[in-house]
Image 1: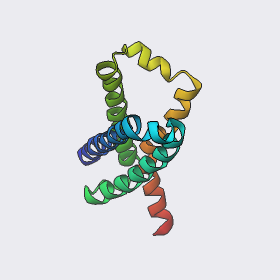
Image 2: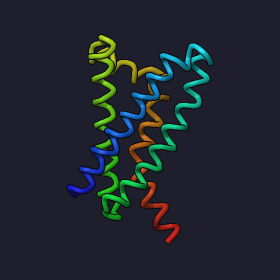
Image 3: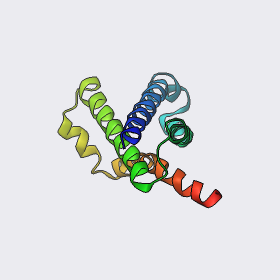
Image 4: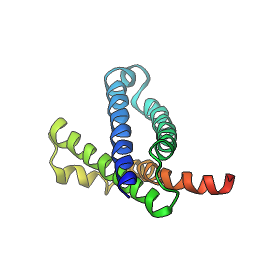
Amino acid sequence: MITALRAGLVYGSGIFALGFLLGSLRELWLAPLFGRDAVVLVEGPVILLAAWLFAWWLVRGHGVAASASRRLAMGAVAFVVLMLGEAAVAVFGFGRTLAMHLATYATTQGMLEMMPQVAFALFPLLHLIRERFTA
């Protein structure tokens, strides 16, 4: 189980760092040139593809057991790391309160933005399902 938790920390931290980097590029350089909506439409699939590949690499490289509970644990830890990172950026980077940040998830846009994050958390488990069907 420790292996899955450690892989989850790496997975969540890595994807948060990628999202932070791409978000910075989006807001500072790309959105003024192409429009925020267009850039966000491209950014989402790029991050999801990176998350899919990173999850695959981690379950292989860290030897996360081929069990649903281990893969769900990895995804859950990664999800918590990602959510904590986003909350920290909102509070310390943008001066929002934690309540203001959490309230964004209750909006339609917030719920739509949450769907790829849930998918990201499920990727380790989905790799297990894929492995069982391709074995």
